[in-house]
Length: 457
Image (cartoon, rainbow, N blue to C red):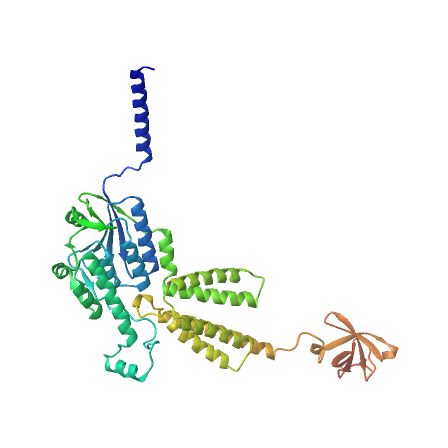
């Protein structure tokens, strides 16, 4: 092989290697922005949708993940999961409160502070980030007189537990403000005093970076901005970038449905009553299967929701007492106690004061009325059964009337047919065929009868 042939051969190998590297290496397309809407109360479904969207945006090597926010707040665990994902993101995250009239209240304010760039549309607001207390107003860690006096000296409704929640939230949002170089003083004020700001005031106070009228305007304004990702400075290239909207898929929609407190409550009640019906009349199958599925879905939803286990225990105790009243009548004591426990447990079930995570009172009243109806129906059936004549054993033959079919021994022994069977009968009077008799007693397998007036003999 000549040197010229060798050179051509090496060039061909190099070209093949370059072509193979080009085919196997994912090429970066033009800058793309992934848009995720964060609307309504923030809960497990919102957090799941946002975090999976962020992971997919990172896999697609998007230039920016844009969160378009309009929320009144939400659950603290879901909010913190979203913030953890934002802080660990491999791409810049831009929070944008839009459209006009939207808000980033409570949990939305924390997410805005955690994002690399914070923006708002004109006519929007943020703030009111004071945490909503969960559970009892009592402080489980203290109970001495000095603490009680200290609590009494505080403003109405503020206890040591509430102060702990506020202090923790204030420190959390202050750390986010320091991380992103934003106004930490106002952030603490939003937590401690529930302060709020409009878009223009937030821009002037250094709470946000941009006021933009639209997504295109926002992308144009932040083009060229430098953000730090994993300790490395990165310049955004968003001008004219294509926007890909990450829509809600079936999984997020399903999670949003079952984690609605009212839906979870209905699923639990269907599950409980389905299993009760199956245990009462086994073999049918459908109530048991449907009840088990609904109960498992409800338990999954309760795992993601802030529930009070004391409320759940009272609710199940109430159902159990009402069922026990139907099977072991106690003149209403178990039933009334069960109804009271059921209603109180239903009201206590959601361990939060957030408006979007409360069970509707009409829902509770409806199931309470349904349970009372079942209890009254079961008791009525039981009382009717007690007053019915006995239809099993030999006792139901007493007082029965029959006609003599045949006689033996000159009329001292006779045979009658009752309930489709022939019975031997004895009587103080001689009997003849076709005589009408009434059963008075049972002696072994022989009936003692009396002849009705008007018989022969």
